[in-house]
Length: 514
Image 1: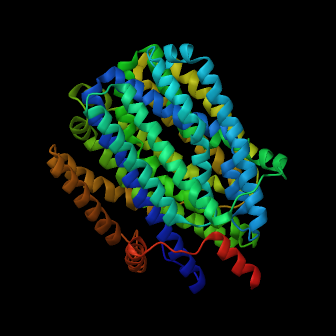
Image 2 (image 1 turned 30 degrees about the vertical axis):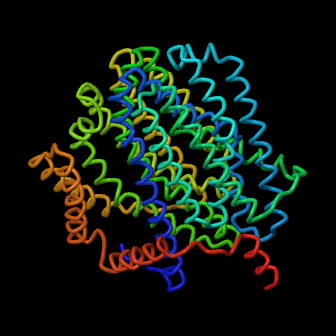
Image 3 (image 1 turned 60 degrees about the horizontal axis):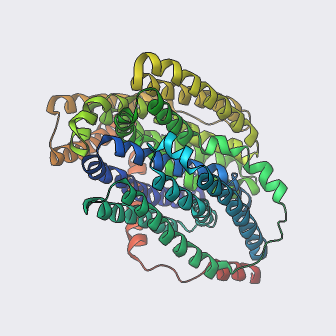
């Protein structure tokens, strides 16, 4: 596919790719944190306490996303193109106050019903529930902070905080566990990490925009947009958490550990979506304000291609190497029972990735009730199918449920999105990526690496060979290779140069003077 774009659009696309790769590199590093913790936790805590850890982390991910009422996402959609500092300040602190009330209310409920919750989720460990309540109190504000940096195109700062949070989690949790603490020390380490990141983020935000007592202007409009986004924003986690809860109820916490390990490896495909999800909306929102429909369509088309170039071979590689990777990262028991989950979740992640890009069209048009209804229905169907499939086929049936739900959610979203803007899927290009992936898969099956270094070398070599085969099939062209080469050079310069001293306040004051 040639880049049939004008010079200005090529420049904008290059800038977009820079940010995608920067956030993508960060997300890859961040995604390594649970993989690094996997052997530490599973081998030192045991399967059951590792299952408790997974229940804790998915709950910590899910609840703040609900309690924040979809408002962090609202900030991105409404204010990406805003140049009014007073308007930005009022909106930010209005949303922050609402999130604080929402998360605080949930935290209080967790404290009141700590005994019941600990029995249901954490095998009666009340301390884990109490730490969860305290962590929930600030997690929603951390979500808002990340979306603040997304909104105002501060992706280096976003990446630094994202990486710092993952690094601190690994270091602090590992120190507690390796020095003899049980699951209580692990969750306490998570709370300490959240406090440190929260203080750092808000110190920087206050420095940039100052502080004001909000007057709650436009709160109804924000809620009308934000509330319907909750089902779609938490869809990935709600399916994950309902799967694990039902596995825990139907099969026991040991099977939660088996499922979680395979799911964690397979969900790397969904992690590949994260930079697109992070970067796309602020840029598309600006184009939408300027009525640049051609630019919106072009950016979405290239995003789909860019995602599939990486995601499709990743599915094949994870499918073949899931068992040896899990054997290294966990215990033989977990690897033996969990490796079959990885390819199913990976394919589901591929569908979810396409959904995540296409659904930006619905968000741009402020038709968030469509995605909200899609995911409310999908979550209901997922729970129903989990109970049926889980009863007959165990964790394999529950994984298949996730794959089916992602596939049909993608199809329905494409149907509604294309009523506004129609994107391309480049079916010839898709065929070439699959052929290239099949070739490297055959080689991996033959060599089938089992040692850590051999696996890493095999994966890197497979990707290089995949790109060579794809290029020879004209799936990618020389102009794209040159573009990405220049982008990587710019990213390395961006990473190693000092952080800019210019704050958002100074940028907006300069804009007003102009």
